[in-house]
Length: 326
Ligand SMILES: Cc1cc2nc3c(=O)[nH]c(=O)nc-3n(C[C@H](O)[C@H](O)[C@H](O)COP(=O)(O)OP(=O)(O)OC[C@H]3O[C@@H](n4cnc5c(N)ncnc54)[C@H](O)[C@@H]3O)c2cc1C
Image (cartoon, rainbow, N blue to C red):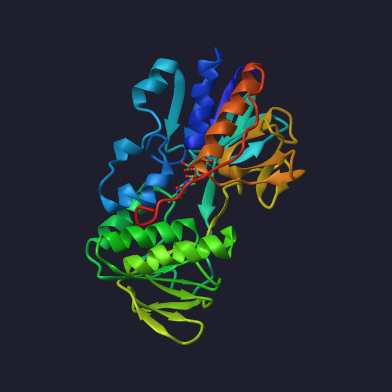
């Protein structure tokens, strides 16, 4: 084989793996495939500064184009892998072509969960994962007065905070008892206070039953019958691993099961970032960690393994959030 390393997914994890390989002296071919038409960028800013209009698309880029060029990384944007033949070490691409590899790194991140809510297809209903979706939401927000955010996880809370800072009347709804409930009731109560202080309304312990409108959303009906007016709705109920195109490797809840270096069950196939569930020696299970720092660390670790360099130490995972400046 002479396909070198093919990294599928030009996000933070994929870009880190590709550039780290070069920094470690790897001199084989490195190809970075990305389904989106833009260079790898950092998603955290999408729900914060980019949505608020204070951060530009260039500010979010992981690296400028010249970095990939200088490092000799073949970046192919708008290029989607649709199938993996792990035995033949070959990828099928959406344009009908195939690409052989010596090693493949699966770094395809996640896709937003789409709840089976009536009205999800209405104009004015948004989800947020890509910069294109963030641009659409930003433009809709500039013309809206009321917003309902379905889901009080990280993305829902951050979007609610940013929309509020833009002057919208914002209500968050969630069947769970409070925002960021996964972090425990104490943290949830503190986050709820930030939102309340900023004037964000919360409807806890009640889910959305339907998104209503004639072509364009105008309101949200809750499971208890309450109707909330909405010029726009943002549905943020989590993401699942973007691995529909992957076969021939072991998955855990849809994520590629890998060891701490990103090695999967198939020979010469690796996975990192939101698409991977990495073995955690402390908890003795595979864990999918959907955070910025993990994408970087896993990208670096897989590059070390591929370049034959000693693995860096496994540190603690951490994350941050930014809501109402707190
Ligand atoms: C709005 C938002 C805010 C966030 N805020 C924070 C935060 O404050 N703090 C924090 O720690 N984390 C945050 N995160 C999480 C963090 O951004 C992710 O954990 C990180 O982006 C994961 O990187 P990744 O490279 O694994 O996946 P991604 O960034 O999702 O990149 C994957 C890339 O692969 C591409 N792709 C998918 N399928 C294919 C295919 N078949 N072929 C080719 N390419 C494909 C996708 O188009 C995408 O560009 C946030 C995420 C979002 C969406």
